[in-house]
Length: 49
Image 1 (cartoon, rainbow, N blue to C red):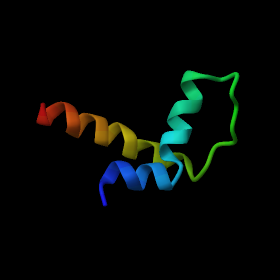
Image 2: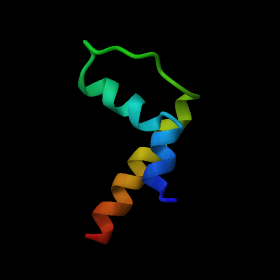
Image 3: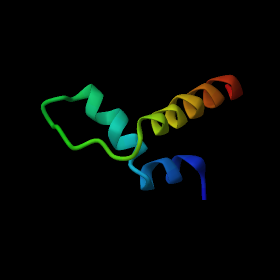
Image 4: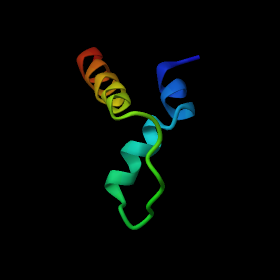
């Protein structure tokens, strides 16, 4: 199982997506600090490239 899959399962990506399309509002999931996971994943992907 990949980290991206886990982020999707726990709703972290949904929290990130709702920022790009506020009209399609879905309630935020999880505590505020969980959003740092997606940014860390993006940074790790960028460094690997």
